[in-house]
Length: 94
Image (cartoon, rainbow, N blue to C red):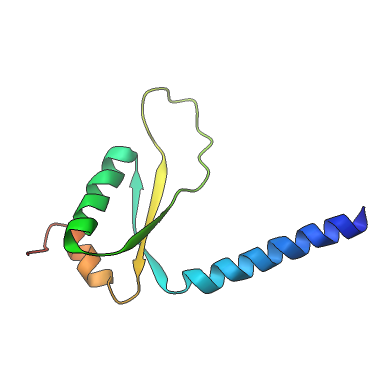
């Protein structure tokens, strides 16, 4: 019993370390709520040529029936923050 718990804790710790190592190169640039806002921001970033990653934390709200309040955290590579902000806020010219 204690060995299984120890192995589970060790695996959780190792996974956390690996995630920290891989996510060091990415920075949070925008948090969108709902799929409409997410797709609008993603389209602007894609049009500007900015690579991005999205994470969606667990959202347990089920009391609102027809409104999408899902949270989307959008990350870009470090060094591209200015280009991403310009693309998101409409200051990007091609």
